Length: 205
Ligand code: AP5
Ligand code: MG
Image (tube, rainbow, N blue to C red; front, side, top):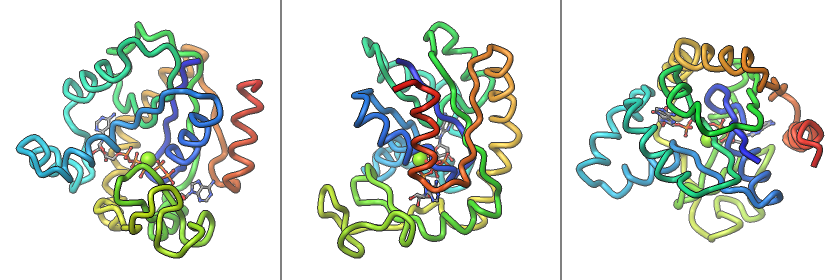
């Protein structure tokens, strides 16, 4: 199975992808997560990437597409979380034989509230919400015991910019997959368990 999950910032792409990948044993790749890891390492490349992430802009298409192709090499089953985000990226992976594309639908107002409550672990792999999806022990990751932190791009001004980029660059991608009859729109305002059940029902798993 080859799944793509799209949607605005904070719409729950990572949350659903992490759970699906674990249950269906799919390779989960989020370019955003890998880009943040590179920034954390403070490499020359990381410093360059940081400029885009901090502004909420897309990292150049050719670079991210190359990253995705490298990561997906020889992978039969996968979930792509947050890629493609532009028509150029979508056309670059036309050969990937995608099974289905989910687009999470959540408004900017809801996202702004949600992201103020998001915390991630130091490895960047696990995501929480302080009230809706809290860790077992306050401020500590359930899986690796690291301290929970806030993402640097979760400032209201950067979230608004990410939303703007989403409308301009990614909405056309969603329409592109709709024309290809691969698209399912998911109401991302439902509680996480209902979102998950809806997705699983569509996948017949
Ligand atoms: P990326 O990391 O992909 O960020 P994003 O698209 O802005 O999405 P988020 O990760 O912020 O949110 P999410 O939808 O995963 O929601 P989550 O599950 O965490 O990209 C970051 C940056 O990298 C980009 O700005 C860009 O610079 C660069 N980049 C990435 N991909 C790129 C590409 N293809 N091309 C170029 N550049 C690229 O959930 C959010 C919160 O809500 C959490 O607290 C969670 O616990 C909670 N939550 C989840 N589901 C629910 C629910 N149903 N109800 C209530 N709360 C929920
Ligand atoms: Mg994410």
